[in-house]
Image (cartoon, rainbow, N blue to C red; front, side, top):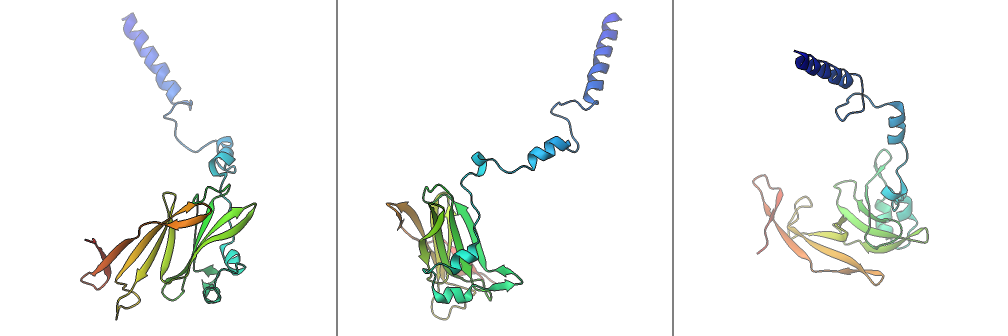
Length: 199
């Protein structure tokens, strides 16, 4: 009887501790003010030390390497929103993340220019450009991947025949192209393109 009583008393104390808002792993509910303040603090330099946001539109407009044709298309499509995609990542082992910018047309969002900017002593410098439309560049596991769609005769703008994807790696201060991959699109029942494995 004594052993049973002691076991029940221990169980009651355990349940009381769990329900009193201890610091166990099963605690739930809103965070305390101090915890919320820590969570809302600026990211540490170790977490995002290489990231520096840029004004992509201003960068393109003042860059003499961007063609006048692309600059003419560089305008808001809807309100204040420009037709640009911006990505940040390490492509050139610079002190600050490189910036990849794609410019698209407002009418059909076809890529008309892709650019990479590298930080040199606090100034972003153009180290890559492709204005062979339609084109789109992205960061793929530390490699610059550039996709250029192509059209056969009578292809509508919405249905290219395929694309060529070229990887670029940074060597000796410039991007060097690797072996491209060609993808041919088939036509689905609704007429939209779908990738077909190349032979």
